[in-house]
Image 1 (cartoon, rainbow, N blue to C red):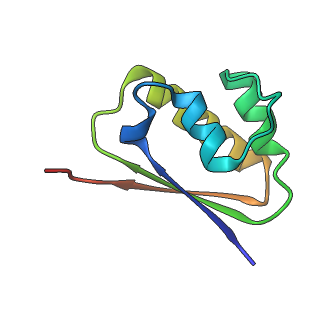
Image 2 (cartoon, rainbow, N blue to C red; image 1 turned 180 degrees about the horizontal axis):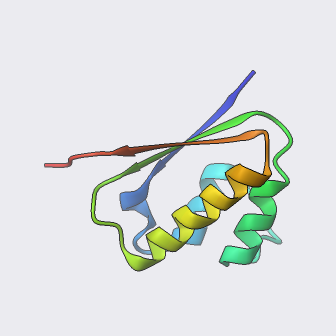
Length: 89
């Protein structure tokens, strides 16, 4: 069974790492930085689909986080990233 995590990038503006920790259920020891995010994403051991729903353009921090997801997807055969541009009114 594939797990699904939907990331509404609009929710990342105030506390991106807090939002990611809540969406993924990361443990309390999550370091709340890009290196720690990469470590946890590459440790996922169950098939997991991540749906990145974002308006364009992304902020600098959002682009960095997206890059971590793309890197982790290349390293972890259980992680699948799907990007979708969303138009909000």
